[in-house]
Structure formats: C-alpha cells, structure tokens
Image (cartoon, rainbow, N blue to C red; front, side):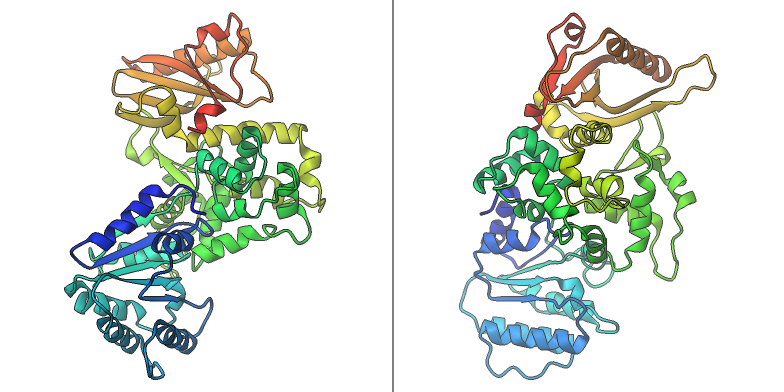
Length: 474
C-alpha cells in the first residue's frame, strides 16, 4: 500500500527506460519509507539485492554479501575476503543475466563500511570501471545513516564525484498523505485527529503504521509513547543514533534549538555548540545534514544578510520529546489522555499548529492563489531598543513577486475563532511596526490561518484572507 510518492516513483521507473546505466542514492530520516518505496516501485524484481548488517564486523558483512550473491542465483561463490572481490563477483554475475535492465539494490550501505574496509573505493571501482560503461545497470543505494550517504556518496569528492545520475531526498508525508494513509488503514480519524496526531508524530509513515483503529488518537499516543513498553518510548535516542555515526553533536544542536521558538543564527549556535575536531566536520555540515533529514529548516530574516539566516527546529517528534517525554517524571501511562484541554496542552497545541502551518507553506500559497507567483518565506523580529518602543515578531511572512507581503497569523482553537478588537489591534500594530522598520514599498496584508475559521464579526471582516486547517490538507 504505497501512499503518495508519485514523483519519486516516476523518477525510479524512468531509470528502467534510460539508454545508459543509472546510479541513484535515496536518503532521508529513519522510518520515512525509503526501502518500502524502492521495493514497491520495482515490485521486488531485482537482479541483486543486499542489506548491510547493523554493527556487523567486516567478516560478517562480507559473509552476508556472499549469501546475497547465492540467493540471487550465482553458483559456487567463494568466501569473500575484500569488497573489491565482492563487487568484482557481483559484476561477473550480472554479466551472465539476460538482456534488459538489471536493478541492483543495496540497502543500509553505511552499515557495510567498517574500519579500513575500503568499501567506498570498491564501490567506486565497480561503478566507474564496470557498471557505467554498460547501458543496463540500475544501481540503487540507500541507508538510514543519512549523513554518511550525503558525505560519502552524494557529495563525494573522490572517485564518486558527480557520478550519481539521480538523487532522491525522501521527505515525511504531508497532512493530505497522512489522511490518505489513515483512510486506507481505516483508522477512523477526523481531520482534527489527524492534525493533532501529526503535531506529535510528524509525517513519518512507520509511526503512523503503529496506530491502532480500536484506539482514539490520544490513546494511541499513550500506547506508543507513554506506556511502559511503548514502541516509540525510546525512539528519540534510536532516531539520532541511526542517522548519525556520532549523534551527540546533533542532539546538542537540536537540544539548543528547542529552547528558541523562532530559531538561532549560526553565530548564536556557535557560541553554544562545541564540535569535536577528532570526529571531523564543521557546524555548517552538521546543520546541513539535519536540514537534509527535515529536522531543522534554515530561512532568511527579511531585510537581513545571509549571516543572519535562522536555523529553526521543525521536527514534530523531537519537539514533542523535549516538551513532554524527556522530563515525564510522573511515568504515567495515560499521561496524554489526561493532558487534553489542560493549560500545558493548550499552549503546546497552539505552537504546534504554527509549526504545521510552516511545514505546509505550499498548501498555504495554493489557498491564497499565489502558487504561480515567485515568493520567499521569511520570519521577522524587531526588538525594542527603548522602553517607549514596542517590539514585534512575525513567524511567517510571504514576500510575493507581485508587490504584496502576507503576514500570517496562526491560531488553533476547538471551534471557530472569535477575533477580538484587541487582537486585531495587535495584528495591525505589528504590521505598522514592520512597515516602519523595513521601509517596504509593498502592500502588507494580514492572513489568518485558523482551525475552523473566524466567527463572523466586525473584526473578522478586517482580515481579507482567511484560511482554515482544511486548506492544509490540499
């Protein structure tokens, strides 16, 4: 049951019609569905497939590769002593197969690299010296250790430099795709349920596959996260350990970013984060890898320079972990169902809704009818310099190519939201401060994105563009 991923499937299927050999790397965070996409697309019709062993020694990795060659149909495979030998034999085996494209799928490639194994150089030689000279090989590699895939394959500066013919970054599901998945599995969830579940789990297909139809949305969260043996109870540590060989610095980054809702600049982060030079890499590399895995986003502040770019923690599960799991000393198996409607929950759900809106900026642009217009999405903050001044913070600005700037206000409420006179004044005052401090010549217009819309009153009529959570599901 493959939901969404039509663009990615189209890319993978097009490789079968190519007049050259193709080398594709697929990467993305743990549990996002990389392996499932590949197997569903090619329907398990592989000339050869292999998966690395978690924490296996080089001898164990080579032994498993030997078994994969035997399983594929190769006769009399000797005991493998090196990766050069392993890939040489793979080439020999593929050369015996009938005419037509031959899909070679190597899953969990990063796990196969052990100290001094020379795995990457052997893969380079296999591709550069044999496969790329043919027209019938489709080599697909992926793995949970996204940082390894990006560093060693996607952005390699050695023998694999610019050798990839395709690369696919697999992102989490959107709300629409989660709704399609929920319907397929007959989970019986309303859009409100789906939205609030998304605020906790994000769009990670595997997490959604754990939801039980017999339980409510809140009961499922309790069962998965707060119950003693919940399947996601220890997911945070497993998540970062699977993606990054040395996860602590990445955990330090997201832990620091979790303290700043609007985000932090590189300079601010540099003061907080220490990079162990023995591990290698720079803070910029770590930030880029976190962004590639959809944990954080980088975005410019309007009117500021590149060095003022903000990095903001966006991963729903990570943020939920810091807010409710890390310090859940009560150890209450029904913590989440008991939290519904309480002040802590209400504060969280409001902030989480803002984040989900930001994750669906394309849907917001579509609802505003500006999908075809060039746009940039920013945030903007002005800190008052004197006691007489007022500061302002705008979490989402859409700067449009048609000389309009939309200031987005996001409010989550269980019913239609009643905009008050004071709130309207605050929105208009925020816009006035923005216009004054940025000296913009563009028209600045407010947009309200609420859960169920605004109550029709005299203040709501001052907001020309009103969207609801329904627009986020498009």
